[in-house]
Length: 115
Image 1 (cartoon, rainbow, N blue to C red):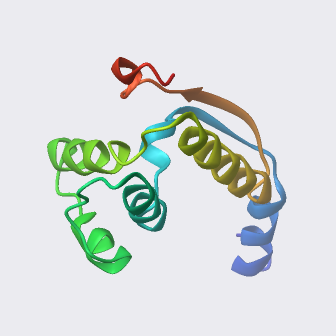
Image 2: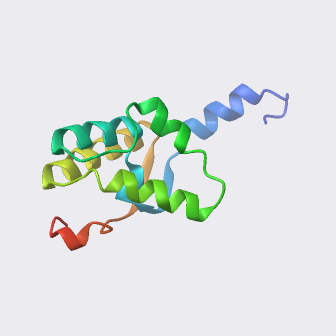
């Protein structure tokens, strides 16, 4: 908050500042929309029929519930192109948020020989 109490100015300042993403798993960045698209493209049995259903399932109550949905979403990615599409989306979104440095990791699906 600024000296005169203007919360908008403070929010603008934060939005304009460069930021750092210290640790992010690429597979954890799959949005419900992307997971649905990947699942349909790859003919994988995604347990949700719509992005809205998937988003409702993303009401995490603890780490275990997060891991379950992250695994389901990441399993929709079956090709190198899927990973490239996800990385492009992730990096594009973060550029808009002025994130200057990334601690990006990947590999939950490494056993598939994709990464």
